[in-house]
Image 1 (cartoon, helix red, strand yellow):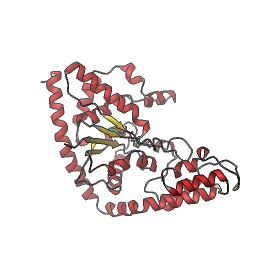
Image 2: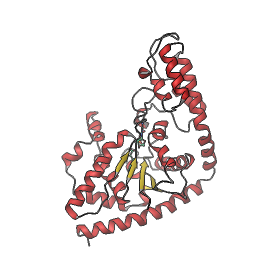
Image 3: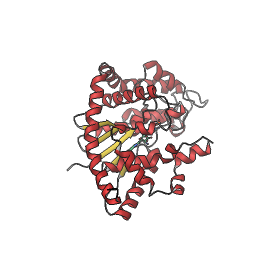
Image 4: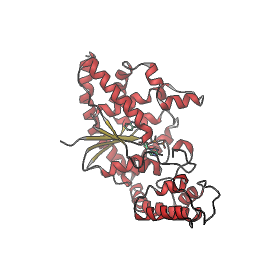
Length: 321
Ligand code: ADP
Ligand code: TRP
């Protein structure tokens, strides 16, 4: 029996290369090895998107992105989170086992509070809905970027708590975080994120990619000066493409003789070269949105059948019948 891999992305903006190298790439690379569930976290997106037409558009866009990066609907169950409403029921049961101080320690909530944002209850409860997403399908592994690690820990704690109170029911999931990637930096050096406006869009035009790369700040060293690759935000992005070329570039940085302009031009060329085939595929997929919706619908039916079995077991254990 294959192990189960599950992950999701929120449809809250254009997918960027941080999403791809940090998480999404693994969804395409692992589908022969695992039984895969990949979804679009549209319930989660509601915590930050309050425009129905926009959410629909972003949802379809993300479905096309998933297919364009190579997710094969014959191998992977690809679906919408909201086609499995049982996750919200399970999240409710988990809510009743979770304390307010425990959730108050979650990074996302603490960050929002620190910025004096008005935190909606959905955002506060976000990790519990995510725990339900993961546990309802008995996932073994959850590929995510480093920023999601705490959420996987919350899912593990929640599974353990339920199992302790009601008897063995949930598998304890493991995070799958790429050691060499962890956090892809954005064009301003902070984590690349849809919410910071510092992204390189995964399916951007050549011009968009160029503009984003050219905006990366660098220091005032001249062409001939030796440069520390560890200090350079442009080099940090080159590191997404490991290999001989990267090592040669590292040597040139250390020796001096390469300017930031040349390094940026090389990076633009690498990114464009890498994404062109996916971008072409995405254009083809976008010709036929009906086919994409059909894949989501069929995936939703498969996922829901799995989820219903688990929720039935939970209902019996907690006494809801
Ligand atoms: P964003 O922060 O841009 O809104 P999401 O929260 O939708 O991104 O993240 C989707 C997936 O991509 C998650 O698994 C997340 O950990 C991963 N991810 C997002 N940004 C990065 C990044 N800069 N580096 C590595 N992984 C990332
Ligand atoms: N919180 C994740 C993010 O921001 C999205 C997500 C929702 C998710 N449910 C999940 C990821 C379950 C992995 C597993 O990217």
